[in-house]
Structures are given as structure tokens and as C-alpha cells.
Image 1 (spheres, each protein chain N blue to C red):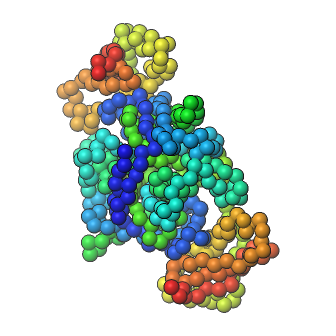
Image 2 (cartoon, rainbow over the protein chains, first blue to last red):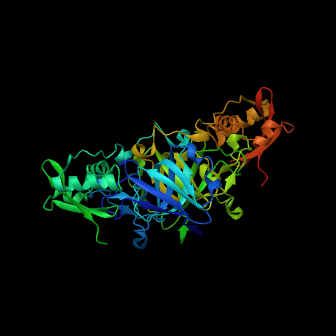
Length: 237
Length: 237
């Protein structure tokens, strides 16, 4: 049985490339996104009552990985990239149906000029992600206090200290005043979980890494003290 | 953008019709089901590691409702069937993409003769439900202790007393010994939440109701003391 699904909206996120995206929703509470509904799903009445919920579920397509198909086993980053687990024991994108599931915080619902835009926090979503469903998070059914979590029982807590060189510190302050309030904390929250692939965590020959965040490039260096942000400048793309 | 999805497995559940199914997963912990994976997804290695998780997410198709399309607003049973809410503020099946989401308990994974069968508890799924994804329930990301739940903040706890007439009591005992251990508790758990449509809860002209459970018909009566099971007999279909 094959079924067709429609995209109902598109994510605009601070994360412009896969590298650096938090590995689950909620790990970086300062990570913001908007979800703009596409016609004919941009009807205000379709969201009546949603404002009473603090969190919602997003069902989305792993649009960056579609072409690669599914794999029976994968190597989760949580296990250092070595151990193989069944794809159904992980949240890997390489699934038979490349659907992702994220619980995010709902900040507010914006409605104007025929648009419906959800403002979200705690996202783990790539910019441009197609959304196929939105559901309220029902604490009595979804928050299972007794659940035990296999190989991923504990949150991968960020533990690295994050410092800024003077120049990127200044740039960050200017960007915060200009268009990106809370940017410094977002950078710290995103980097302290160590976005590097497991390979580099064990073989630190390479110490400099970069990622796009909003419309600028962020570069940092790994050293004995943790992480130092060395550059923030406008993206050329 | 339209995307095709494949069914990866099919649910075999005690619930053979929509009437009587719990309104969310976990509300009837004794409700059992099996999920048999279809080829090529019935590969044992695709499930390695899943046995360490107490719960999993099922993404499924609302196959009983597909033809009816989506509705911008719905009348949730929780609100007595009167108030209209946006479909995205509910877990109603009448969604743009008719995908359901349930967190269920994983009892065990059976593997033999090329089959992979997951044994599940706490289901809210109709027999025959097509499954499109299985994901581990990650407590650190999915169990949000601080979430607040809008109109559905509290679980719809079953509060009705459930009695059995002598004849169905005997039948139930025989069925428990024969093929259905725990049947009596399943009947109590299923009925005490009051499966009647909200209309009948407010207008009790009709007092007798019935549902299929496994391969028999169950009939009960609503009265001042709660519910009395009046008949259990083999299904004719």
C-alpha cells in the first residue's frame, strides 16, 4: 500500500545546514524557527485551541536525505559512530519512510494578511524542512514518566565551555542589537553539545569547524579549554 | 510537494471496530496488539537495540477514515461533542495527512521463520491499521515534564463501575482459560472510560451498546450503578 502525503507548511530555522543541528528537539531551547502554513492549510480556524498547548509535535520530512533510501542498520552518533543498531531502534533519517518527529515549544501563533505562522523554540530542524502534520502534545498520553530509554537513556548534555575571541564577541553583540536577540546564548547552547562527528571527537587532528547560522558563518576552534568562537561574518551565499 | 509512503507492517489488535477504542494510547494498559513487519522490513537486524526501550512510537494511517478528507475544525469527544476546535489542536483523524501517532509499551520482539513481530500493550489502534514508522521513545526528549495541555490537560480517567451478569462472567472465565488471559480486566478497562459518543452521555434514551473485541461480541448496559456486561458470545462475522 502506497499513500501520498502533502506538505502543509515549511520551516524557517536558524540552522541552514545539517552540521550543527541539535540531535533531538529540546536540547537547545534557544533554537527558534517559524512554521508558515501553505494554502489551503493557512486557515486560522484550523488552529483554534492550539494556543492553549505549551508544546506540539511536528511530523516532517527528512528532505536532505530522501535520495539515500533506508538502511536496516545505522551507527548512531550517541554511540561514537561505531556500534550498529537497527534503524527502528534509532531516530536516524535513513528510514523506510523518511518522517521525523519533534516535540517543540509553541511560543505564539501569528495570523495576519491570510498567513498563519507558528513561532517555535527548541527545534532540531533544518531550514526548509517540509512539515506534514502538527499535533498538540498531550502530557497525559505523551509524557511517559516510567519510560526507560535503552542506549539513549540520558540526554546528551552539553558540557563544553564556550568562549569568544574579542572580534566575534563584538560582532555577536552588534548582531544581537540589530536582528538576533539571544544570539550569544544560541551559539553557546548549540556548540557546547559538541556538534563534531564522533570521528573527530576521538581523533582531534582537525580543530577548526564552521557552520551557517541564520545568514552568517560561524567558525570555532576546539582546544583544551573547550571551544573558542573565532569568527562570525556574513554568509557569502 | 507530494510524497509516497509505504506500509511497513500491519497491526493485529483486540479492537475490531472503531467504537470502543481508547481515545489515546496508554489509557487501557491491558489493550494488546501485535505488529507484524512486511517484507522487506522484516529483517531482524533492523530492530537491534529496540528491545532496550520500554516504549515506542508508532506512526500509522487512519485507514478507516481516509476517504473523508480533512476538516479545518472538529468536535473533540473530550469537549462533549459541542465545541469546535481546529483540527491541528486535536488528534482527530480528519487531518490533511491522515497520520496517527501513538506511544505504546513494547513487551517483546518475536523473531522466527523470517518473521518479525512486535508485541505491544496500551494500544489505541484498530485491527488492520497500517504502520508507516516505528521509533524508540526517548524519555529525555519526548517526556516533557513541564508541558501544559490545553483543553486536554488531564487524562480522561475511567470512573464507571463495571459489573458482569452471571452468564457473561462465566463465559469470560472460560475465555480467559482458553485463549484470552486478562480478558476480564481488558473489558473493565475498556468500558469504564465510557466509550459512548458524547451525544448518548447527555441523552441516555439508549442504554444498550455493543462492540467487537477479539473474535466475540460484547454487549453492555448503562444504568445508575455504572455499566453491566450483559452478553459475550462468538462473533458471527
